Image (cartoon, rainbow, N blue to C red; front, side, top):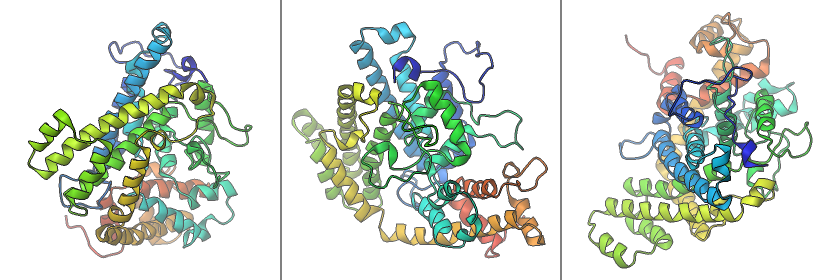
Length: 454
């Protein structure tokens, strides 16, 4: 792989159309960022769980604020990496028309979109959908589907759902295709797992193979993007697997930095963990010394103290990630480096300790477990109702449920598609796109537990 081909302003869904010429002062990658931030899928993140489901405190992050913060970290990572590479290659990037700001814009845009496909109730939502199709009522619906299509549903992946949001236009919505019509570069950078759901590689140490990044319905979409950027293919055309776009490693690092550090800050605010515990973890990465100690000792509020440490820790982690990426750049380009950057920086072991602490004390806190348990009832109940309606819509009740579906999930005539896999995937995507509260309210309504008064 080479940087000249890895940066492309070609837009997915606009192949063959002339390039726009009336956007002076806005690069194509900045336009990608704007398209994502103005999308309805991005707005819905404001009511999706990050750490604590359905928090009562306005302070606690949701998926939207997490995505914005991750995007800020990603922009710094990308821009500084771009500067370092331009120095390394003695101005080659300038000659190619690629700027450090382009690196930053691409990573920022991909970070902004990285959680668009996450279902309600946090990562538990993915598990709920997966178990529904592999262990519960959903097994009857996917019998007879090809194995790869079954795997999409039995191992439902929010990253693939996000790629679908970015690249797919429902036929009932528009004659134009390509979803948000982002550049090939931003879409490839977004795709941390550039492979289909099969084969499952349980024993892999490669970061890009631990999950999958696109459904069977979108495998040829990603193939077009991969070939357009000359991504390194793994195997032959039957495997639908490629090496990551190098900037995807920075997206992953930005996300890792933010959820490792910021989740425990939120947990302290919610009194799930103590200030002393969080302070100990953060000062383990950034020891407070010299002038920093004078400043820190002058801060009296515990929340402000954690905020100060958080900013210092994130800054340190950013430069540790950048140093490692630059050292490994050649291996990243030839596809032999395929590990998460944050696992191999100097602070990697300390981050791993924070992650274990978060799993044991934060994500498994009683209030989280109670709401996630309710999420099982909500998500499986919605899947039951809408999939049954689409696959067997002869009953009056089924027809009413179809009328409750947004029209884009139906064909142009408002009927289910002829393809069972597409109908099931559309229901899963519909529910995956819901906010936490909308999923709960819709479930209550269709189950007769509460009725909306007008």
